[in-house]
Structures are given as C-alpha cells and as structure tokens.
Image 1 (cartoon, one colour):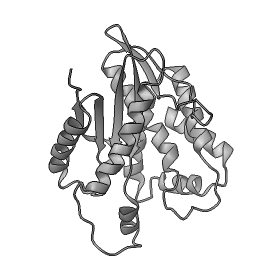
Image 2 (cartoon, rainbow, N blue to C red):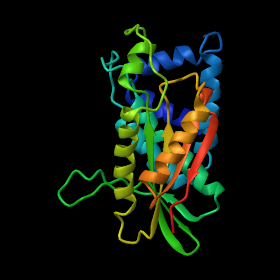
Image 3 (cartoon, rainbow, N blue to C red):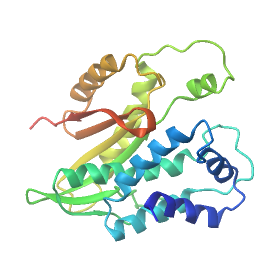
Length: 247
C-alpha cells in the first residue's frame, strides 16, 4: 500500500465517521470532477513520503494522526484538516534534503514546547560537510479573506499582491522557525523550509511574487538559509526559491 494511503487508512480507523474522510472518499472516485486533481496531489505526496526512512515515516505519520481531530461536521473556520496536512508537508523538506545529499537525515521526535523551559523542537536533523544542521518546516496558507471569497461567502474582489499582511504572516513563521533550528544543543546551522500558498490561486503574477520574496529574504533574513516551495495545481512545484545567508 502506498504511504499516503497508509496514513489515510489509519485516520479512517481512528475517525470512521469523520466528515473529511467521507468527503475524501467521494472525491477520490474516478467519476468525481475533483478526481484528477486529487490523483495529482496524492502522487506528489507519495513521491515525498516514499523518500522517508521507516523511522521518520513512523514519526511523521504519528504526528499527522495525533493532529487529526474527529469531527462529524466541518467546523466553521473552513480550514478543515489543514493542520494535519501542514504536518505531512514536512515530507517535502525531507525529500529536498535527501536530494541535497546530506548525511544521517532523520525526523526529530516532537517536543511541542508546552512545558516551562521546553522550547519546541525543529522537525528534521541532518549532517552536512561535517556540521550538524536542523530544518524547520512551515506552511503558509491562504488568508481567511481569500478563503471566504473562494468559498462564495464574500463577493468583493481580492487584490493579488504580496501586501503587509502576507509579509507579516511570513515573518511570524520565519521568526519561530529561526528560533527552533537553534534550540538543540548540537545545532551548528539551520534551514527553514517554506511551503507558500498564495491567495492568488491562478498565480498569474507569480514572477512578481518571486522577485518580492527574494528581496524580502535578503533584507529581513540575511543570517538564515531559506528554501521556499511554491506549489501549483496538484501540489506540483511551480517554482522554488533558495536564499543563502550572508557569510
């Protein structure tokens, strides 16, 4: 069984009557209008999940399962199971690091940092050129405003540009990740892996977005390595941005 299917199977065993599971099973049928998009998305997840060593896959799938909350009906925020899939996105960072040919690559057992003097751990540990590094993965999702617009709850137009609200959201994620990769006592350097979902799902202005992000990373984060993935339809990478820190 494919690894994505294994995770879904565990979720279904935990929450057999969950609304998302019911919806997923309908949309994953070949006669459903969403089937081709779901098929592409699942294929990309499996490519990433198949790169994981058995222990890392076990750690990641347990994290996803733990985060998945059983619900008979969808909650009002419209985000569905977004947090669970944000966790699964960590597999894309693992795949990136594996292609980078690092050593001793593995997921880190999670410490959520809820206790006193217990900072949250980064996601992935690896070694490169004789140094120990850590990687923290952050997913930037569509804004609440755009979610409502896309769902037909708001009928005013959206401005497709990277405004202050977007960059504040990126900054919050990067500041948190920057702190996390420095937390382990053996950490010698860190990488932040970003997955960015723009409000503009058409991505007509993605060239401008790419330029804006380059400038933002250079000006605001000269001391941390950042790799950003911008997915297109079906989670296939539209393009990637790599920011190298100043030495």
